[in-house]
Length: 345
Image 1 (spheres, rainbow, N blue to C red):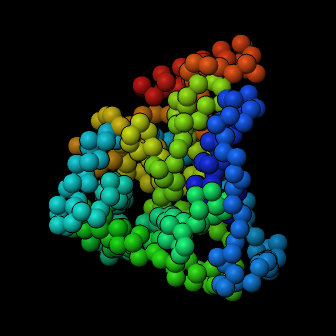
Image 2: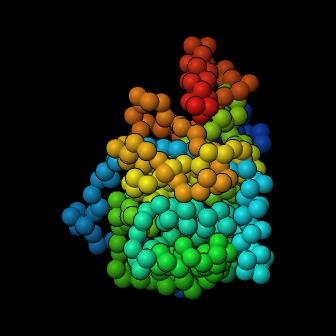
C-alpha cells in the first residue's frame, strides 16, 4: 500500500481486518460486513475528477536512497509523559496541550540543543495532521483514502532553547488547531494547479524534525495465529534524517527518530513508551542532552546486523496458527528471543 493512496487510519484498519481473517482460519466471524467507503463526493465542488498528472518521467522523484542508519528505541513511562504534560500546561496557564504535544516539544528542544546550531537559525517541526474530523461533514471511519496534511511549526534556535517547554508545546498545539477544511481545500486546489511529487530524501535536514503515525492506531490487537505482537517497527524506507515515528505501547507511546548528527547521547531510564532513533552508521557515540530525561535506550540492532534490516512487526505467544510448521515456529521463537536479548543490552 502506497502512502499516496491511504493514510495511517486506512492502513491499520486494513491490517486489523487481515489479522482477523488470518486468525479466524478464513472465516467471517468478527469481521465487519460493511465494505470500506470509497466515495469522493466531498471533492465535487472543489476539483474536477479525474485529476490529470502532467508528469514527465524526468519529473518523477529519484529512487529513494537507503542511508546507513543506527536505530535506538526509547521507552517513555506514562507517568513521565503525564508529568511533561502537566508541566507544559502549568507554564502556559492552559489545559490545551496534549501528552503527545508535550513529549514532542521536549524532544524538539533536546535534539536542537545537541545540534549546536546558530541561535538565529530557523528550525522546523513537521507534523502530519489528520483531516477526517476537520472536514464538514466529517469523513466516516471506514473512508478508504488519504486524509492527512503536513503542518509546520517554525521557530528560531534561540526562541526554542530559552523559552519554557510549555511555549514550544503550545506553538505545536496552535499549528494543529489552525488546520481547517479551508486549508485542505486550498492545498488540493494548489496541488492540481502545480502537482509535485514528494521526495523522501528532500525531507531530511539538520534543521528540521518530522513526525508521522499516531498513538491512536490499533497496532497490538493484531494476531495472525502466532500470538500477540511483541513489537512494531517500520522498515528502512520509512526512515530519514530527522524522522520521528510515534505509536502506542502498553498505554504509552513509541517514537522513532532519524538524524545524521554526532551529538546524541541517548536517554538511560526506563518504562512505558518507545522511541526509535536512527542515525548514520559512522556515528560511534550518542549524546542526548538531559541525564534526567524520562526514557531508556534500547538497542534494536545486533553489533553485526545491517542497520536497514529492521523487522516491521514481531508476533509471538500462544495459539500458533495451524498453517505454520513446527520448524517455522521454532525459528520465530528463537528470533524473538534473540531480539529480546538485544533489547535488554
